[in-house]
Image (tube, rainbow over all chains, first blue to last red; front, side, top):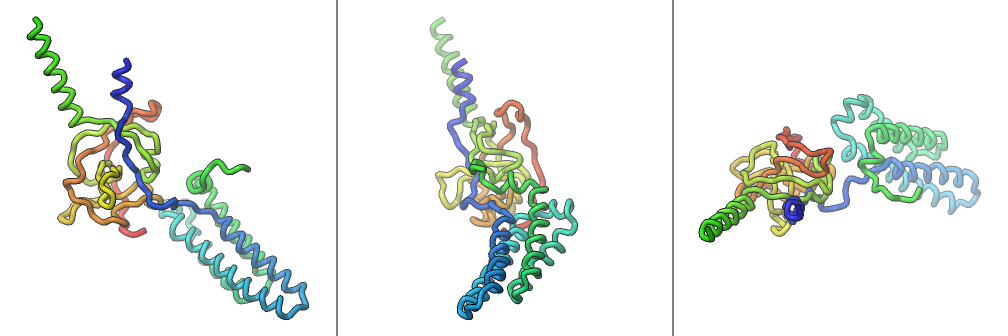
Amino acid sequence: MRSLRSLLQPRRVVDAHCDIPCGVYDPEQARIEAESCLRIIEKHDASEDKLFRSRCVHVKEERAELVKHHLDVLWHDYFKPEHLEAHPDLHDTFWKATKQASKVKQSMDAGAAKELLSMIDTIDEMWKATGGPEKTRVSGRPS
Amino acid sequence: VGNRLAWVAITAIAAAWFLRRRVDVVEVRGSSMAPVLVPGDRLLVVRSGPRPGRIVLANDPREPRRELIKRVGRVDRAGVWLVGDDPSSSTDARAFGHVPAASVRWRAVARYWPLRRAGRLGSARVWASDSF
């Protein structure tokens, strides 16, 4: 019996290898940057300080660019052709959301930033519906 | 009688040695072959050359001591194009190019552990893209 067990106990480990801890995706990353945009616009509007206001404009543009980047990564790297079958509006949703991120970059319109948040939430639903949380996030994070 | 026993023993050892060179068991690490193979799966492997669609073992051309488990995408004059079943979390031919056909010598034929997922490992068509 012991020999049978040792026969079935592999001594060779084979690697279904991946170089880098890739495959971690979460629309939350885009959402946090988009939330920053909204907050910065609100702080901008509440301030009289010229210098502060110009800093707000600058930082908000940076954050909006990051939103576009994170959405692009999800779009190209996370979503697969089979997801498109289940969500035929996937491309359109991403196209509109990244366009909306450009709008937030260009303007100081809090409404545009809110609209962007809701578009990211739509993408988040698709990510969840395709098993994103289980497939892409590392488990074990305290809730 | 002692003579015969010795022969039986020698034959058994020779058979075991021969089998060991033809058949082996391995454990999977990493998840680039998900969902078909997941870390911890134990597989039966047999000596066999590369054929498209098969799950094979091959030495990592960048680090020969590492033995990879991947699927054969295609075999041509340049060598064997290996890919992971989960392209988004696999380092494979897209990163290291073709591997020599001679470096693919084992094929995974079945999983025996965990028991509830035990069974034959078939061939599968491979996704076509060569890029990340």
